[in-house]
Image (cartoon, rainbow, N blue to C red; front, side):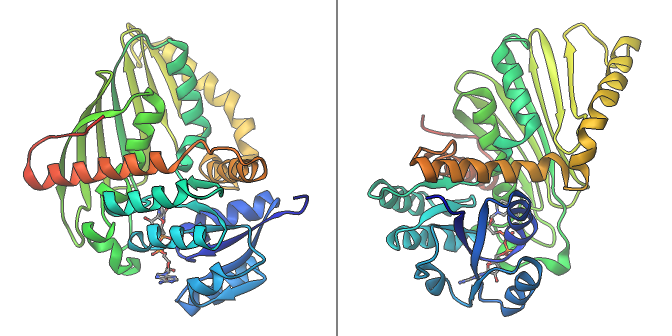
Length: 350
Ligand SMILES: NC(=O)c1ccc[n+]([C@@H]2O[C@H](COP(=O)([O-])OP(=O)(O)OC[C@H]3O[C@@H](n4cnc5c(N)ncnc54)[C@H](O)[C@@H]3O)[C@@H](O)[C@H]2O)c1
């Protein structure tokens, strides 16, 4: 295939319009050829901003469009698995936003259908392509931190009451911090630590919607202790801190200079550490400037993930993030939900 890959978007909501389509417009080598949404106001908005060739007010029309190579499934969580299955039935490659389903059986149905298909299916855990996540993984792999003891994460992604779609209000329909935010951390824990989650304990609090904030702690199969503080109210932050016996790595994923390494006996307040941070800022600033007006590394992670998807489609390769990864994260979310409901920790089968 020498021409550009042609994608159709099922769903023109926040993630499609604010994350994927701008990243694809910047990339240029993949064409957003068609879009579908039941909300005609969204279609009008997308037409004005991104000028797709064709628009549909239903997903069935999109799936039967012969001019599409792949479908990006970006619908409310309850529609994700069934739509991805229908896209495979229509012979399209599939790129699917997590969660890939709301239950283990939904995930299984999709996995089973994909196993009978020669099409590429990739799950959109874009943080695996984030520059600083990649750097952190390389540092963990290098052994510089020594034996890892713990990972501590913060992810605040505030939402506005007036713009909240109904599905985002309830845990059962895929809304709230335990599904929408914890899920990405569960994938990052697995990706960074190269181990599976052994057990989870979660506490969540409701506000105007369910699970506005949550804390989740746990243990990986390799013994590493995990924790995440998640909020859909508090101000923006995405942090990961990995502590080993030889050193500690602190990563803020929304700052270009956001990676700091401290040897075990180093105080972050020492003159050497302070000067090190200043020098790091001065080094990174010129490199970050060209990325800043394009929403920085966060946007780039979406772009690079699409480059990988295109490469997998052209070469029929297995993507870095598979449906098995998508299902594992859903199972971890279900375990966290069970823990938040029962007040007991929940073991995950390995
Ligand atoms: N927003 C993010 O950053 C983000 C991050 C990770 C995962 N996700 C996942 O991506 C998916 C989409 O998220 P979002 O934030 O864009 O949600 P959203 O609610 O903003 O958008 C969903 C869109 O789907 C449309 N829609 C609903 N039912 C439809 C139907 N039957 N046919 C066609 N269109 C229909 C809605 O009109 C809406 O425009 C969700 O499953 C979410 O969990 C989103």
